[in-house]
Amino acid sequence: MKNNFPSEEYKLLRSLEPFLHYKKSKRYPIGIGDDAAIRNTSGNERLIFTADTFVESVHFSLRYMTFQEVGFKAMAVNLSDCAAMGAAPDAALAQIIFPRDSPRPALTNAITRLYKGFEAACLAWNFPIIGGNLSKGPCWIIDITLIGVANRDGRILKRKGAKSGDGLWVTGFPGNSAAGLAAIHTWGQRKNIPKKFGSLINRHVKPMPRLEIGTKLARDSRVRAMIDTSDGIAKECHTLAFENDLGIILEPGESVYSTEMRELAMAMNKDFHDWFLYGGEDYELLFAASSRFTPASVPNKSGISLSRIGTFTDRVKGVLFKNINGTMVKVEKTGWDHLS
Image 1 (spheres, rainbow, N blue to C red):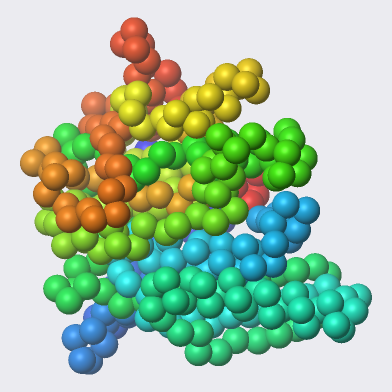
Image 2: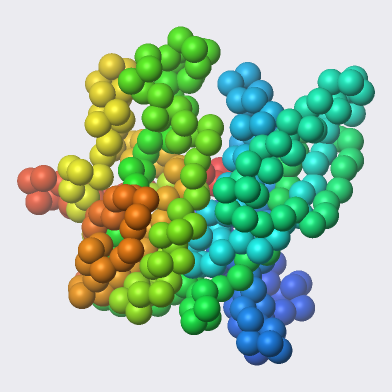
């Protein structure tokens, strides 16, 4: 099982480890492979570092997103990695590559609007942008480096730590973002999409990282491991299973599937389970917790739902989905993978 990598992207990253000049130390207790790197300081402060790249026509399209929405989402993607570690944002660096043939007045306006999107995220979660870079290139590329800081008690959640018998939990409604993107592709323009599907569109173009609930989960000793769902439930489950050398049996209850996603699937003659398992870009939190964990024990003023969708076990390998009739179906290693 240890060589059965969860994705080709993961396999490539592991093959690069000999070139990193990294050795586990008190300052840097973990290497690559988690949602963020950890830096212990002499002042007993624990920092996290994460970076993500947002590429035009790969991660976003200006056909259906404004520059301000692109800026906010580019920042939110990194904030979600911060949330998955149970940390809070401290500061960010923003690097922007713009198309080399952009006319100057339009370029200035576009970059200003990108920064307004950045600012909206900075104001929402109270952190500054402290630097960055501008350069021309083949298309729009927004790269964010985010610095976060751990909770006061210093606990940071990682992908490892789950035990056999632990429950697998998720925040929110996975699949909503993929459903929103499917609606955009179907109706072409956002203004043509029925208003009842508006929450699905918003989840795709303006995801809200689960920072507040992430820091609260990190304070709960019954929560043992966590990852964000940027690449879809299926891929993230395979990653958690691999990292913890355990299998996962998925058995989500009906309440984890949003009403809007179900209605859209019916209108489009689609199976909403595909969006739930393989969609990605939800930026929800997927976490392992002991049998003693209950959602009621987590302060949750925002009312974000916490749903148990499966169990970690040493009795199976990989990830299986348990149907209503009790049969087990293998969950494929599909989802977002840059090398697929």
